[in-house]
Amino acid sequence: MKRITQLLILALLFVSCGSSKIISNNNIEADIPEEDIVRIANDDLEYEIIIIEPGFNFWLASIARPEGYYSQNFMETRNQQMVIEWNNRVMQIQRYDQNLYELQIDYNSNTDYGYDVNYKLYNYFIYFQLTYKQQLSSFVPRI
Image (tube, rainbow, N blue to C red; front, side, top):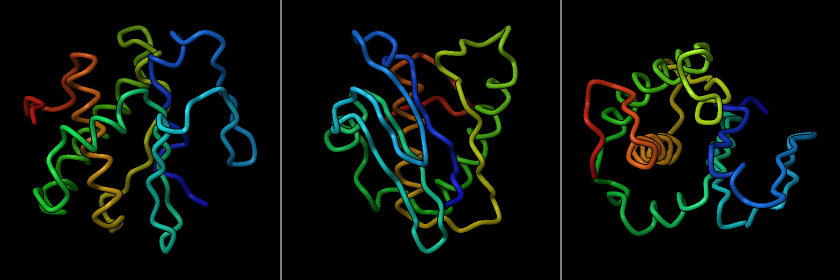
């Protein structure tokens, strides 16, 4: 199965005691509470995103704008911009924190990933920017 990201594992994982992150055979094996893992997939296209971020699931359910608030086109445009910046930061390890920007995201603007994938990816970027005080585009992240 192709992946938009191999895995977005971010800073809070290394804070928790004894947490480990191991990826083998497309499975996640770690001492990570299930509520901290978000799987976004479009099985028809064989793409998936796995986000391991304590607090994101709660934020998505309680604070983020509801599904349907943004158009898919809006989110695709913003996601493309933020993915480009994200990938640039992954490559600039001397300039950006490797604990925040671990892996590149393979996001193709010519692929229709569907509403759900774009919605959760877009909201993850908003969550990430607000939580870690980062700015991935010229647009100020807000809810």
